[in-house]
Length: 406
Image: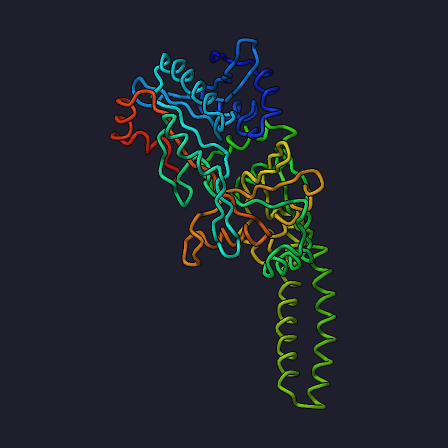
């Protein structure tokens, strides 16, 4: 068997039937990263008959004075349980890339090793755990397992089973916020490239606007920009209706209190007073919004559709409109929009520390509140070709600078 540079067509055809296929091992992702100062190769392990046995996209760039490194995003497309195949692929990769003065190739395979109970946070490891040791026997250096977002891709991801998801699967708090958002004039629509500026203005991202424009352009019909806008005219009508209904309830409680003086009735009257005050404020805000901000974008998400999965690449909401609960409406809309055509929704990374005191607790609670499951991936590995160069990059901090995501 030998290593061969594949055509885009040959690589894409191979990925269609590989169980580890993912959007980061694709022509579209290669082109996006090509705009980010990466070069890229489509590499295949081909047998004597020309049959492709394994393949990978390798992104590569210079690091240091005269050294290069490679990165196989989400790992190789290979049967990791076939030790002979993996060893052959690794040996051939070394021969191929050592000649090009590569110090190492990084991989972070999309291999699930653990499903964590989202309620008790107990771990349920599966047989894929053995692949950690196997990869190290094959010559990979296992990098530290981070709890947070220091690695290129998160080690912990939240997934929603779309075929079995509805409002009843959400946490009680999420159900209430989604219902609350549905009456505030919010509606969903598919955005266009001209809406990327508004989307980007809500993000807290180290990436440039150009990065998201490249994703939008290269993924084409495999990508949706989901927008949440607010129709203040409907918001005014809904709030006015609720206000009038609550006034009727309040008058009834007043009448009941005149006839009898029960503490439970007094509490109902006080709750009703609070609702009337809240609806009054909503009518005021919605009326002002109708005058100046009707159809304003209050939340958005960039979504990639690949195979049977939908991936939320980035999402955000306008913090000036927190009372609308637009971020809850956004994710509920995404779930309902894709549940009939796709099987899973990848909500993106979460932290591996599930304590309520953790700094990412609110992020975890938000994503898990949509009835998500927690999966842990196998982590990052470096296949080192030139240990002297690798150690030098490590000692001088060049590796840390290149991959630091804090």
